[in-house]
Image (cartoon, rainbow, N blue to C red; front, side, top):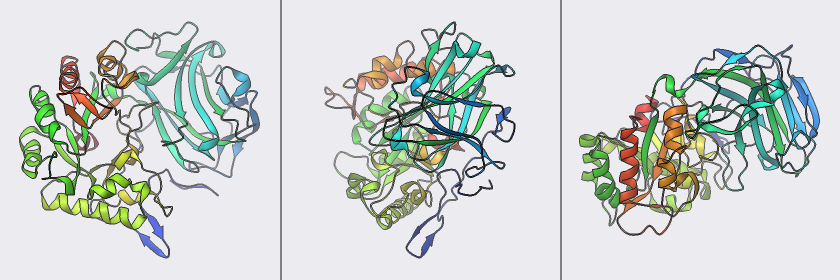
Length: 453
């Protein structure tokens, strides 16, 4: 896409610089799937008809020609810097369209393309569709700010897809049933994009596009799941694999190369066995255990590049041909010398999996494949949506992925026979229950690499 003055490309470009050097992708091509064509699109060019409202609007430029990645402009909002509690119009800055032509979202999802000046000044971004001035409305949480790891980063254009399985609230006559399925999926005349800041000063958000695209259920009518494992623990092979083999379910194991064939980890022969006999994908996590422990965000760009390159070479030497990667600790931010971990990894792998799942699940095709979301901490020690009983219960993430769409990527670490001590340990019986529920629901299970291909 052609960028305007001050604009940048969507995040994840596979080039970074170090001093006067310029690094370009090596190894496999970093194949970024084209954005799924939209059946309806508001690209915020002249005459778009959206207006700015809210008690926290500091400044609105509805025809902003300084920042854009499509056409010649976007629409921008700058908040007044009030701390928002998401309690009403007074603490929000919003762009909205009321009383427009009705849109049908049955079997559809909403895709947003936007840019944030400083995510540290954000608390939330929400998006709503509805009728009657949004008295009847469904709402998604687009972004929740974290002090540790944010899927949306400052100063970059991002694309996020909102699916029915990700709904956070409903108002008025609109409801969701026990499985999370909305009561209405068509006839929406109103839309609103809302910014709630953290009270740390003004924050600017540029909105480039609101689009309607097919949801995951158009391809996978019973939902789509990928079962992934980090760190190649031996108990996954011993305790987890049999429960998956029982139902012919493949997995993706993200491997730390120098820990293979050491105590408590997979052996090389076991990796080959799950790949060749059980249909698993043997993917990359890091080459050196010490670098994994430090995280890619805890070392220099040169260390990251060497580690990812050595990992890719080791995988090729052992006939593990996956292009998939999971960031150590899920961290894809910057190295200690200020370079993008995501961009360096993209030199060697075509996808990068995080452990962020707070707001939204993935979709097909994911608009940002170097930043795949996944649900981790699946353990009886965990509260909330990653607790095994909650997961398989009514309205849990399995229901939401099955009935309302979304590519659900599950991330396990260990499968144990003793009482779990922390969120990295899932008991064998809980793991078996989850596998059985996936099978009973008729959900499609594919490796990350299969989905991306």
